Length: 485
Image (spheres, rainbow, N blue to C red):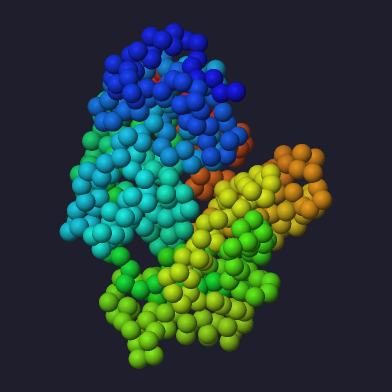
């Protein structure tokens, strides 16, 4: 059972928290704090002195000053959609969860400058909607968009399906406001696209998972909304050919590919089994499934042609026809309406929930050089099958990111499978192929041992030096990201 309050002069600390943010915004009762003391996976559970919900950057700064003076660990938290335990307090130390959900204002939106300034607690989908009202988009996109917050996106440098065109969260951010471990506030919300005046503190804090400070607001880039989209599901003859298809699409559309998602047959099977209402996009077995979306903001590409089709769709269809003649694409289904497009994306975004519902699984968030993905999948799938695991893989193929989930082969008991051996096999091949064991979900608590084994010692030493210099008392999200050393 989750305990609400740690026994470390809790009452005095809680009173001090209330003095800063108000009694209504300090939670201590078990029924109120339970959901804040775990993450989406449910694998990590802990305790805290309280859950504190500041409403301003000034309140965050006062909280951090107080915690630094009293040696209380600070655990920043957003939408609680993490998968690695990064937002769950570490056991054995007096901690306070600082939830930023009240800091949910869009401070400004500049259509001419194509920027938006948003507080850390703004839900990603809310930012999407605000931009779209101005004919613009904020292109960070993934399944948790309705509940994750931009602060959490910054914390892990989240990616998603559109990285192939727009980059990760770091590439979309022009500046931040942040509270440092001593309570001082960095205000770098100018939104300048060129500002070479010293170390880029923004890039230091993005991806730091709250271990160097709390990002309270950020300025993001906006882009013109597409006037035309072409969305299709392809069956490609083999994974190597998928990269050829990607490059041909990029060349043909001037870099217009926004998403290129890998969805092999096992992933489709589990989605359709768990969610029978989701229809398979193609009849029969899929060799190598790819969900592709091409978009353009050019008026020319959105023009309706004599046959009623949109120019961009016609061009993509023509290209796919040629690829089918070459034998690279075996079959294709093109969305003919917005509903069909939505159905395809619902299928893609249902995979994590489907795997979770289907039974126990271990999720790996990895990345590889594009040219080495096929070798990894071929070798590792065979190895996992030998060990009794069924790989359920999807991925952002355009940027080399695979979500490689291991479930039990039918008839095998999960608890009897050699999971540690399987993980070692995966990490060994990743190292051989110059891949990464953490692409976009963060390190949190779950990957600390792998950091020790696989991260270059010199890089770890520099990270620890930075952490020690900025956070002398180690109050900022301790036990996350950096392994002890």
